[in-house]
Image (tube, rainbow, N blue to C red; front, side):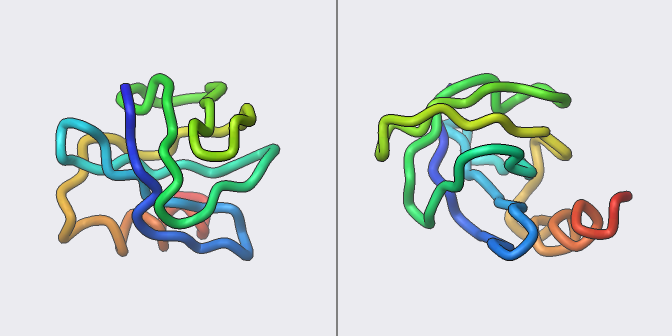
Length: 86
């Protein structure tokens, strides 16, 4: 699955990724650091520890997927929850 980095809370490594299905996933990055607009490839539609590929910078990212299948209106709240560890 492909997605584009849509929103970032860069300081804590939390990002919202808009998927090719036009919903959103919240990821917490463990290694590597994407930027707004970067194209990510991988299992964006399942929770847990994953490895994604940043097709823009050609590097691998180790991430934890915190939320999936979100609508745009719920992205901000999900990022806040991910930062707080909920």
